[in-house]
Amino acid sequence: MKRFPFHLIYEVTDSESLIRVVAVRHNKRHPSHGLNRSWPQI
Image (cartoon, rainbow, N blue to C red; front, side):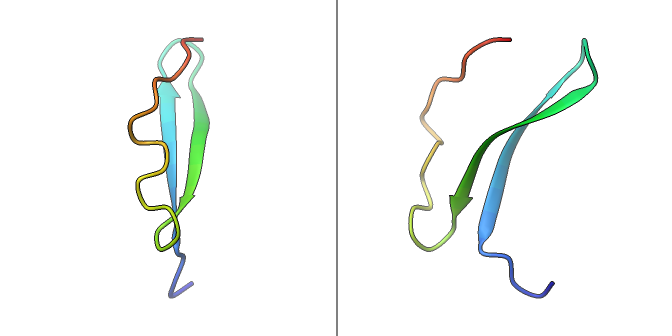
């Protein structure tokens, strides 16, 4: 895939060995979406 205009913001949890995708953002439309958000704790 040459171009993928999205970024995945994810979190890796140590206790359960899970990867949680917390945001998918488009690089051109909303490049700062989700950066200043406070994420809930699991």
